[in-house]
Image 1: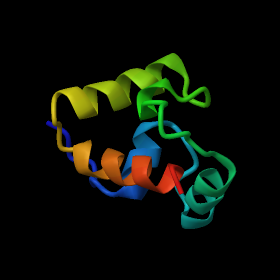
Image 2: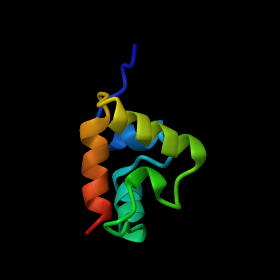
Image 3: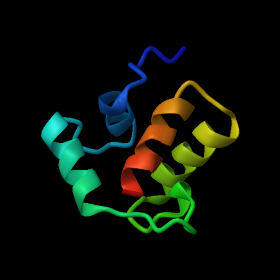
Length: 76
């Protein structure tokens, strides 16, 4: 059973990334996705991170809403 918090900090922790508010803001500020690149295909993910994101989207998992939010933030 997944007992993780399904928020941005929890998502970053699941992805093995620094999950402080400042680290998340820095990641979003320093990474940008063009409109034609799906989030899971972004060059900055490891294979495992990309798979986690792909599964969250495909399976409409508990993480899907937070992943969608991250996707939107990376496109601004």
